[in-house]
Length: 320
Image (cartoon, rainbow, N blue to C red):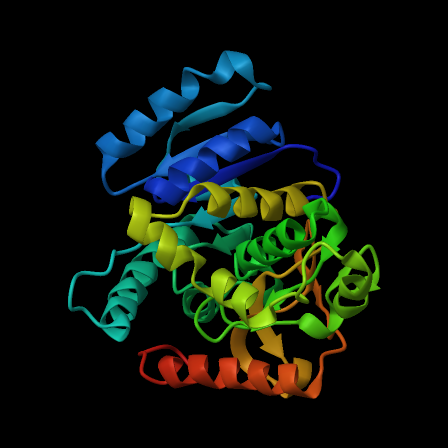
């Protein structure tokens, strides 16, 4: 989008838990001048729009309405949160094949109207695979296709570290990289609190007898979604806030570093796969994917994550 703009139009495809919560966080942000919501279930979209519009007097001026794919023609950012839910007994690959077909239909409708190449922000899981699918079938410039990636995983990581040491999470720095899923990687080697490496901080902390239990914290991060889904059926509040953060970086042309998913082109020797790495995000979308100094073990795990995703991609019917 134009770096000089201070407001933007966003179209959200999918009015489920994540899509509607995202619309709510964007409505509160004051960044967005217009939000269009598209869903195959028009009644659901209409209900969400009515509910949101009744709160308009409490926020900065924003137009919220039920959309059609024609709204893509003048949207700055298109958020895709639509998809099929996994059924009991259904394999991950079966689900992925279904969602790939859903995405082929969504992307064909977007490209029919979006001649201005807006930024496509993919949120539907498995997000790295579907970001890759979107790259391949949309024909959009690679910097314009972004997955929400491990932005939320990184937030969970920072929160749990902050809770453990009793420090404001905004002063805890670290990244979860790789797949948003079972093969994600905690970049412990560069994690720090106010610039102090984690182990050095622990030596002086004295809040507990043990050092930071790395495996315990990482497992909690990796399995957080499973636990939440088991207890309440879905995750959406923190997901929506992470999407809002990405939109904010784009709309404000911030050059912020976020662990979004994008198509890699040689970083760490990886190519033609979408993974999350610290990435400069601005009004153009992806400005630069950064190669942070990882340990040899972290690089090994990142490669394992990439290979795991490539194994899945080989089983999909996608353009070369």
